[in-house]
Image (tube, rainbow, N blue to C red; front, side, top):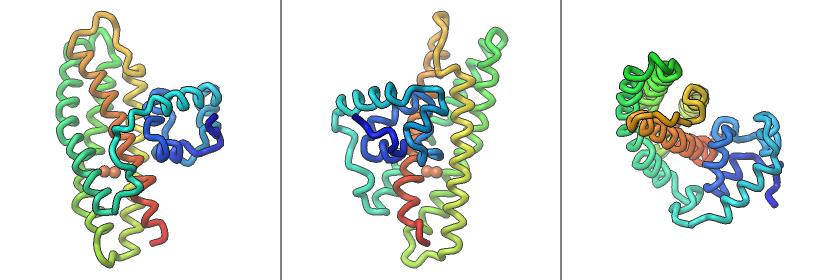
Length: 224
Ligand SMILES: [Fe+2]
Ligand SMILES: [Fe+2]
Protein backbone atom coordinates (compact mmCIF):
# COMPACT_ATOMS: atom_id res chain seq x y z
CA UNK A 1 0.00 0.00 0.00
CA UNK A 2 1.09 3.53 -0.66
CA UNK A 3 2.10 5.80 2.22
CA UNK A 4 -0.64 8.46 2.25
CA UNK A 5 1.55 10.75 4.36
CA UNK A 6 3.94 11.23 1.44
CA UNK A 7 3.74 14.54 -0.41
CA UNK A 8 1.84 14.45 -3.69
CA UNK A 9 4.84 15.99 -5.50
CA UNK A 10 7.13 13.18 -4.30
CA UNK A 11 4.61 10.58 -5.46
CA UNK A 12 4.66 12.06 -8.98
CA UNK A 13 8.46 12.31 -8.90
CA UNK A 14 8.73 8.59 -8.16
CA UNK A 15 5.75 7.51 -10.25
CA UNK A 16 4.82 9.83 -13.12
CA UNK A 17 1.75 7.68 -13.83
CA UNK A 18 0.19 9.14 -10.65
CA UNK A 19 -0.11 12.54 -12.40
CA UNK A 20 -3.29 11.89 -14.44
CA UNK A 21 -5.04 10.33 -11.43
CA UNK A 22 -4.30 13.41 -9.29
CA UNK A 23 -5.26 15.72 -12.18
CA UNK A 24 -8.60 13.95 -12.50
CA UNK A 25 -9.27 14.51 -8.78
CA UNK A 26 -8.14 18.16 -8.96
CA UNK A 27 -5.27 17.51 -6.56
CA UNK A 28 -2.58 20.09 -7.30
CA UNK A 29 0.79 18.31 -7.28
CA UNK A 30 2.59 21.41 -8.62
CA UNK A 31 2.22 24.58 -6.57
CA UNK A 32 0.70 22.70 -3.61
CA UNK A 33 2.80 19.60 -4.12
CA UNK A 34 4.18 19.78 -0.60
CA UNK A 35 0.83 18.59 0.81
CA UNK A 36 0.53 14.97 1.87
CA UNK A 37 -1.83 12.79 -0.15
CA UNK A 38 -3.86 12.44 3.03
CA UNK A 39 -4.29 16.20 3.56
CA UNK A 40 -4.85 16.92 -0.14
CA UNK A 41 -7.63 14.31 -0.30
CA UNK A 42 -9.39 15.54 2.83
CA UNK A 43 -9.27 19.07 1.48
CA UNK A 44 -11.03 17.87 -1.69
CA UNK A 45 -13.55 15.76 0.24
CA UNK A 46 -12.02 12.51 -1.07
CA UNK A 47 -11.20 9.32 0.76
CA UNK A 48 -7.37 9.10 0.78
CA UNK A 49 -7.45 5.30 0.95
CA UNK A 50 -9.61 5.13 -2.18
CA UNK A 51 -7.37 7.56 -4.06
CA UNK A 52 -4.26 5.65 -2.87
CA UNK A 53 -5.81 2.49 -4.31
CA UNK A 54 -6.32 4.22 -7.68
CA UNK A 55 -2.70 5.40 -7.61
CA UNK A 56 -1.44 1.89 -6.85
CA UNK A 57 -3.48 0.59 -9.81
CA UNK A 58 -2.04 3.29 -12.08
CA UNK A 59 1.50 2.42 -10.95
CA UNK A 60 0.81 -1.28 -11.62
CA UNK A 61 -0.33 -0.44 -15.18
CA UNK A 62 2.94 1.41 -15.83
CA UNK A 63 4.14 0.91 -19.38
CA UNK A 64 7.68 2.18 -18.78
CA UNK A 65 7.77 4.19 -22.01
CA UNK A 66 7.74 7.67 -20.47
CA UNK A 67 11.44 8.37 -21.02
CA UNK A 68 14.26 8.84 -18.55
CA UNK A 69 13.68 9.95 -14.96
CA UNK A 70 14.03 13.77 -15.20
CA UNK A 71 15.93 13.78 -11.88
CA UNK A 72 18.79 11.97 -13.62
CA UNK A 73 19.14 14.66 -16.33
CA UNK A 74 21.84 17.32 -16.13
CA UNK A 75 20.49 20.86 -15.73
CA UNK A 76 21.18 21.77 -19.41
CA UNK A 77 19.43 18.55 -20.51
CA UNK A 78 16.48 19.20 -18.18
CA UNK A 79 16.07 22.77 -19.45
CA UNK A 80 16.38 21.50 -23.04
CA UNK A 81 13.67 18.92 -22.36
CA UNK A 82 11.32 21.51 -20.83
CA UNK A 83 11.73 23.88 -23.80
CA UNK A 84 11.61 21.21 -26.53
CA UNK A 85 8.65 19.33 -25.10
CA UNK A 86 6.54 21.65 -22.99
CA UNK A 87 7.25 25.14 -24.34
CA UNK A 88 7.07 24.06 -27.97
CA UNK A 89 3.85 22.15 -27.27
CA UNK A 90 2.28 25.27 -25.74
CA UNK A 91 3.34 27.45 -28.67
CA UNK A 92 1.26 25.25 -30.96
CA UNK A 93 -1.55 24.41 -28.55
CA UNK A 94 -2.34 27.86 -27.11
CA UNK A 95 -3.31 29.61 -30.41
CA UNK A 96 -5.23 26.50 -31.47
CA UNK A 97 -7.33 26.18 -28.28
CA UNK A 98 -7.80 29.92 -28.08
CA UNK A 99 -9.34 30.02 -31.56
CA UNK A 100 -11.40 26.89 -30.93
CA UNK A 101 -12.70 28.25 -27.58
CA UNK A 102 -13.75 31.48 -29.34
CA UNK A 103 -15.56 29.54 -32.06
CA UNK A 104 -17.40 27.21 -29.65
CA UNK A 105 -18.40 30.15 -27.43
CA UNK A 106 -19.67 32.06 -30.49
CA UNK A 107 -21.75 29.15 -31.78
CA UNK A 108 -23.08 27.65 -28.52
CA UNK A 109 -22.50 30.37 -25.88
CA UNK A 110 -26.07 31.70 -26.02
CA UNK A 111 -27.38 28.29 -24.92
CA UNK A 112 -24.46 27.43 -22.64
CA UNK A 113 -23.02 30.48 -20.88
CA UNK A 114 -20.24 28.33 -19.35
CA UNK A 115 -18.65 28.29 -22.82
CA UNK A 116 -18.37 32.08 -22.82
CA UNK A 117 -16.77 31.92 -19.38
CA UNK A 118 -14.47 29.13 -20.54
CA UNK A 119 -13.33 31.23 -23.49
CA UNK A 120 -12.53 34.10 -21.10
CA UNK A 121 -10.46 31.79 -18.87
CA UNK A 122 -8.60 30.33 -21.87
CA UNK A 123 -7.80 33.88 -23.01
CA UNK A 124 -6.40 34.70 -19.54
CA UNK A 125 -4.40 31.47 -19.50
CA UNK A 126 -2.82 32.30 -22.88
CA UNK A 127 -2.02 35.82 -21.66
CA UNK A 128 -0.34 34.40 -18.55
CA UNK A 129 1.60 31.59 -20.24
CA UNK A 130 2.91 33.24 -23.40
CA UNK A 131 5.11 35.88 -21.71
CA UNK A 132 6.06 33.34 -19.00
CA UNK A 133 7.63 31.03 -21.62
CA UNK A 134 9.56 33.92 -23.17
CA UNK A 135 10.75 35.11 -19.78
CA UNK A 136 12.02 31.67 -18.81
CA UNK A 137 13.81 31.17 -22.12
CA UNK A 138 15.34 34.63 -22.31
CA UNK A 139 16.12 35.37 -18.66
CA UNK A 140 15.67 32.61 -16.13
CA UNK A 141 17.04 29.56 -17.97
CA UNK A 142 20.17 31.33 -19.29
CA UNK A 143 20.79 32.57 -15.72
CA UNK A 144 20.41 29.03 -14.32
CA UNK A 145 22.87 27.72 -16.90
CA UNK A 146 25.42 30.55 -16.43
CA UNK A 147 28.81 29.58 -15.06
CA UNK A 148 28.61 32.06 -12.18
CA UNK A 149 25.05 33.38 -11.84
CA UNK A 150 24.30 36.39 -9.71
CA UNK A 151 22.69 34.80 -6.68
CA UNK A 152 20.41 37.67 -5.72
CA UNK A 153 19.01 37.99 -9.26
CA UNK A 154 18.60 34.23 -9.55
CA UNK A 155 16.69 33.98 -6.26
CA UNK A 156 14.40 36.83 -7.33
CA UNK A 157 13.76 35.31 -10.77
CA UNK A 158 13.03 31.87 -9.29
CA UNK A 159 10.58 33.45 -6.84
CA UNK A 160 8.88 35.21 -9.79
CA UNK A 161 8.64 31.88 -11.63
CA UNK A 162 6.96 30.21 -8.62
CA UNK A 163 4.57 33.14 -8.26
CA UNK A 164 3.60 32.98 -11.94
CA UNK A 165 3.09 29.23 -11.63
CA UNK A 166 0.62 29.83 -8.80
CA UNK A 167 -1.34 32.21 -11.06
CA UNK A 168 -1.32 29.61 -13.87
CA UNK A 169 -2.46 26.92 -11.40
CA UNK A 170 -5.41 29.08 -10.33
CA UNK A 171 -6.37 29.59 -13.99
CA UNK A 172 -6.20 25.84 -14.64
CA UNK A 173 -8.57 25.27 -11.74
CA UNK A 174 -10.90 27.97 -13.10
CA UNK A 175 -10.73 26.34 -16.54
CA UNK A 176 -11.67 22.90 -15.15
CA UNK A 177 -14.53 24.45 -13.17
CA UNK A 178 -15.87 26.40 -16.17
CA UNK A 179 -15.62 23.24 -18.32
CA UNK A 180 -17.34 21.15 -15.64
CA UNK A 181 -14.47 18.64 -15.54
CA UNK A 182 -14.37 18.58 -19.36
CA UNK A 183 -17.62 16.62 -19.64
CA UNK A 184 -19.49 17.48 -22.83
CA UNK A 185 -23.22 16.96 -23.46
CA UNK A 186 -24.51 14.30 -25.83
CA UNK A 187 -25.42 16.91 -28.47
CA UNK A 188 -21.93 18.50 -28.52
CA UNK A 189 -20.54 19.04 -32.03
CA UNK A 190 -17.06 17.93 -33.08
CA UNK A 191 -15.54 21.35 -32.33
CA UNK A 192 -17.00 21.33 -28.82
CA UNK A 193 -15.67 17.80 -28.16
CA UNK A 194 -12.28 18.65 -29.67
CA UNK A 195 -12.02 21.77 -27.49
CA UNK A 196 -12.71 19.89 -24.27
CA UNK A 197 -10.31 17.06 -25.17
CA UNK A 198 -7.58 19.56 -26.11
CA UNK A 199 -8.06 21.59 -22.94
CA UNK A 200 -7.82 18.52 -20.71
CA UNK A 201 -4.63 17.47 -22.54
CA UNK A 202 -3.27 21.00 -22.17
CA UNK A 203 -4.01 20.99 -18.45
CA UNK A 204 -2.13 17.69 -18.08
CA UNK A 205 0.87 18.98 -20.00
CA UNK A 206 1.06 22.27 -18.08
CA UNK A 207 0.85 20.39 -14.76
CA UNK A 208 3.72 18.06 -15.74
CA UNK A 209 5.69 21.08 -17.02
CA UNK A 210 5.23 23.16 -13.86
CA UNK A 211 5.95 20.10 -11.73
CA UNK A 212 9.33 19.67 -13.46
CA UNK A 213 10.19 23.35 -12.96
CA UNK A 214 9.00 23.49 -9.34
CA UNK A 215 10.19 20.13 -8.06
CA UNK A 216 13.13 19.08 -10.22
CA UNK A 217 14.68 22.28 -11.58
CA UNK A 218 14.14 24.90 -8.84
CA UNK A 219 15.36 22.73 -5.91
CA UNK A 220 18.78 22.45 -7.60
CA UNK A 221 19.20 26.17 -6.85
CA UNK A 222 17.55 26.19 -3.43
CA UNK A 223 20.69 27.26 -1.61
CA UNK A 224 21.56 30.19 -3.90
FE1 LIG B 1 8.41 26.54 -18.51
FE1 LIG C 1 7.28 27.94 -15.82
